[in-house]
Amino acid sequence: MEIKIQRLLNELPIGAVEVTRDHRIRHTNPEFRRFVGYSQEELQGISLLDITDSFDQELLEKHLNQLYQGETGYFEMETRYLRKDGSRVWGNPVRMIYPSPADTAVTSDSQNVLILVVDITERKKLEEQLRRSERMNSLGALAASVAHDFNNLLTVILSYLDLAIRDVEEPASLKDDLSKIKTAALHGANLTQQLMDYGRDGLGHVEAIDLNGALEEMVTMFQRLLPRGIQVQLDLGPSCPVIVTEKTNLHQIVMNLILNAADAIDDGGEILLQTRGLPPSDRSLPPVIRDLDQPFSALRVCDTGCGVPPKVQAKIFEPFFTTKGDEGTGLGLTTVYGIVAEDKGYIQVESEEGEGTCFTIYLPSPE
Image 1 (cartoon, rainbow, N blue to C red):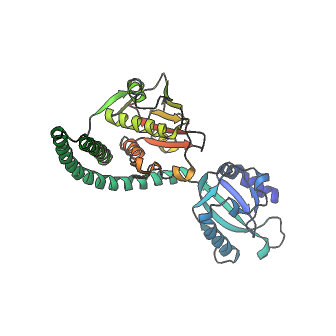
Image 2: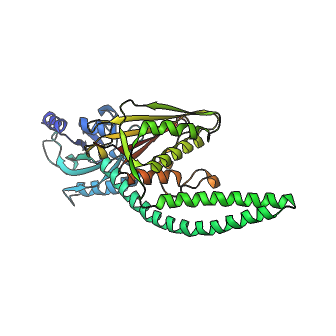
Image 3: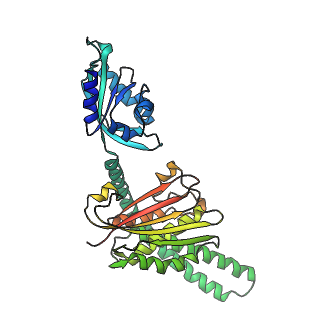
């Protein structure tokens, strides 16, 4: 009987795990092991709570105890699990209580919990992107409104500074002070332009753009903005199709990602720009856009910098979040995210501390 139950679990197309009364794992099927990244030997006998995110442990234990005490026959709970590689995945499990087939008599001590887990990680990522997009849309409207009024004030300030600098001859220190004030005001004007770009409503000129050709034109210009020790390299895919977007959009994406990469490199390094054309059937496409059944172009911007800690990765696209102190505006990556979302694309980041960072932008191509 025990062997038959295990064989049945192994044939299930979704994750399945049998847990004893004290929450210890008794048996898992291959799909569950793929889901959490552990082998059966590694999982055997450990507590299910050990591979459950700390945020969900208390509620999970409460539900399990209710099962054992007969207060309910099953429950559902979206749960975060800790994979062996340190990442988190989401499962939408159904848990039910049943007598262990190894026991001839059914008692309260012989009851195990069977957990069937559906992998909903990609769905949760898509929901988070939707929530983030909605927050950014609201913040964008506010930012654009404030930036517009502030830009009008800066225009007046800069006009009077130009007049003052022109009319002042002595002392030289006063003219130098006025020049520094103008420099600060110009930085403010640049910030308000970023805010207005972030909050704009996508009314620019959309056109078909040769991604490879556009990058070749941009690299020469961007290379001049970087410290001498940082080199930009191109790896352009031969079959990369055109993308449909605003040329200024692409310019903003590449500029912000290159400057962000340069900030992560302390003393010399490399920034690599890669392009690839991906047909709808390409398995490397993220599942959330693979179902759209259309070709995409992938643009990867990778650096050899310091990398991004996991806690920071979760916030890097949030408006005004920056790790650069007073030198950062917190709008560079936010602008990139907003443009990609506006173009119905997708962005993901991969990074390890000390190992550099890669941003991958997926932009739709005409069929």
